Length: 261
Image 1 (tube, helix red, strand yellow):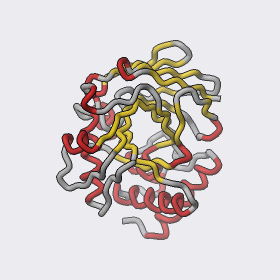
Image 2 (cartoon, rainbow, N blue to C red; image 1 turned 90 degrees about the vertical axis):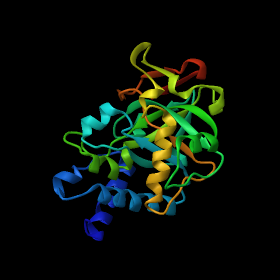
Image 3 (cartoon, rainbow, N blue to C red; image 1 turned 180 degrees about the vertical axis):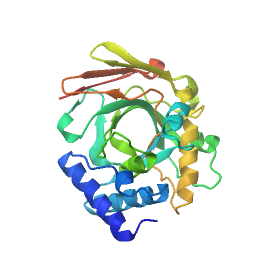
Image 4 (tube, one colour; image 1 turned 135 degrees about the horizontal axis):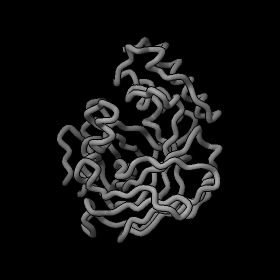
């Protein structure tokens, strides 16, 4: 493990980058010995300070849930970050680009929990039973660490590159639809850029939520009722700039539209 003072210093750097919408040099370039556990420790310090400043945790995000992304990063399991109340937008909103260091969009589903989920033996069926509704969502990715040469350690420390969430579409109970076959057709300024289906997320998007409950158990935590769990992308990230109109069609689950200003 990195020394506690180094972990605190890196958390301070990331907090300042978040405040100024800037970027910092790669952690792994400066500390090649840093491990995944170190990166979660850095994220944890940042999370505790954000909560102490009065921000309310509304849920978690899961990343690296597709085989393609895992192979690209050399990691064999997903990662996770936290979502606070000041990062939530809704269908039709205008989202200021200046809030972010950079902007990419991913297509996802969010699980709203009606009861807690806890490991170590949480299953996909447990997730579906604890979910009040599944909501179409776009994740706004935002990186505070230089992109060139990033590793999974850098990304996790940077709250798994989470910037925000846009909720919309037609929320449904898991019993109402086969979640594996929810489509995502992502357009920018009227042109289709990415497509996918939710089965691309570990075979079923609820699988990642079960993984997260089991992973958190290792750290003495659980997922609480009322939390939103962003289950992982079933498209590649799409870059977005100021002035771009974004539309995603989820078929029977409706659409999400937003504009970056």
